[in-house]
Length: 102
Image 1 (cartoon, helix red, strand yellow):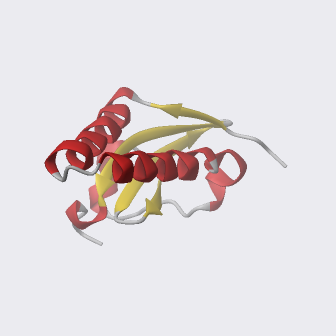
Image 2 (image 1 turned 45 degrees about the horizontal axis):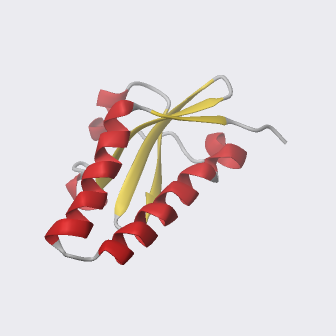
């Protein structure tokens, strides 16, 4: 079984930090923020074993992230990533409701 390396790019890291801050400060739920972000990061880590098994996205929204772009959903968030060789590059973490053209 092939193992993939996971690289979280700066923009995705900023998305995760922003999400954490929103839950923690705007909704005043620090424990929820910790649990939600931990679950999100666990979902990303699981890509190590199956990153290429999720289907390549064809909608125009995903074209901005290049070819071979895939998505993983975690609760109401979408993790957008690409696979090159044996590395999964996490591009963005965005609310699923913001994705147009599905």
